[in-house]
Length: 123
Image (cartoon, rainbow, N blue to C red):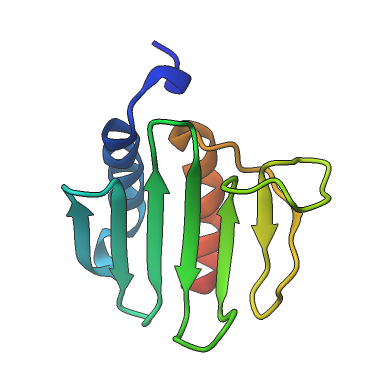
């Protein structure tokens, strides 16, 4: 069964499993929202990871560092207004309002290992 046919909740469970396997001792809270397809992981270092999937193959991975505007890293495909070669997939770098090309494609098996490498640099 390919990941393109997996529903949002199953994608979140897979992402949660991969992240817990890598960062259990670095995590102090995990919330899997039953009403909305969103996973929240709070890290001991103070930042929060939000992962969202929906059943329309849209996704976002956001690392929030503070409540300051643009103090986040975000990968998503919710809009296609950004002029990047990976359109609609794009990356919003920390403290910038722009978007760049992204390697993420909305599939946990491919994206979460990339996200794990990004998180390791932050930890």
